[in-house]
Amino acid sequence: MAFLIKSMIGNPLSGIGLGGGADKEEEAAPTDPAKAAGMTREEYEEYQKQVVEEKMERDADFLHKKAERATLRVCLREKYRLPKSEQDDNMIEIAGDDVDVPEELLKMVDEDATEEEDKDSIMGQFQNLQNMDMDQLKEKASATVTELKSKAEEKCSVM
Image 1 (cartoon, rainbow, N blue to C red):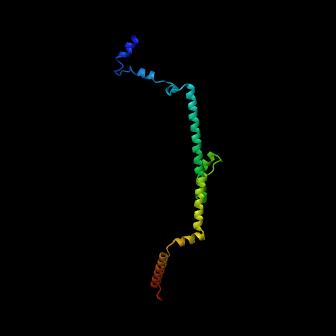
Image 2 (cartoon, helix red, strand yellow):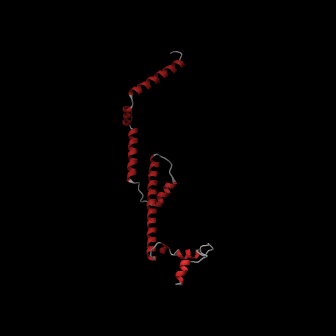
Image 3 (cartoon, rainbow, N blue to C red):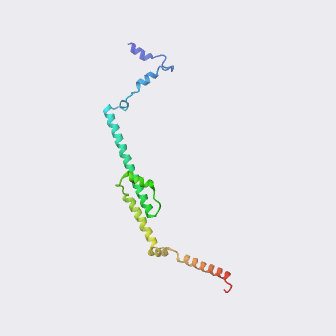
């Protein structure tokens, strides 16, 4: 009965803020993280193991993706004869030898390479000529010829 009366009335000093209520808050907060999460100790340990394993798996996937990107950058540097990057080489070494460039990226690089080869070839140049406006080309050529004639007349006293 005394407990009931004491809990109803409470400690008169606890509301003043002299430190009387802090003891109850500390007692109410469990010191064991398993109890705080609402699990048993074994469940909590298993959960922590799963969290660590998932983090390690994510980190490994992330490292692999970074190595794939580094491999692609190395391929592009070789293609365009750019200087090598030690950072990319180190990333590939860390990830191991099993790093390949993803197929989607390889397809994109191959498509770019074929487009560039087409543009560099003679047939590609002919296709560019077909796409040009012939009237505009004739006007530019005639303007250039007249400009050259006028400059030649200025410099040459015979003409």
